[in-house]
Image (cartoon, rainbow, N blue to C red; front, side, top):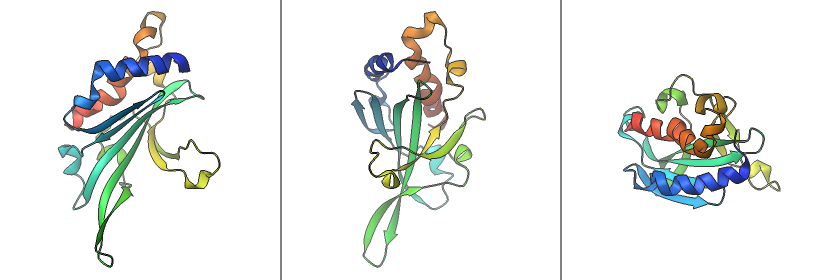
Length: 168
């Protein structure tokens, strides 16, 4: 587990040190005080599994869960769809039948769909995200006293950087 203030501090540090924005798959990266937003190109390995779909990108967000006191990884896949009637290309969310296989996720990863929003006024307009469930994060990342200062760096290695290496 990591406290919110420590998470925010380590998030800024990881953004600078890990340089995810320099990764060849990264189309864009935006750091906020408590959130990291990354736009990724569709990796060739994933693209080969998508039939004839025209996938656009994978949107990744790293946020803090107050409930679990852990970072959480959110994912959305986007595809282009052509509207013949209006002669326009539309970007829409894509939901593969088996997300774990589609993204080549390891068997221990628990991924689910849920709604995440910062706007409590309009919860029905909240976007749907895949998220990596954080319930076993401390056990996976390691939660001992001497590892506390680089907790988020280890989390990035396990939950994001390792996956990027697999799908490249």
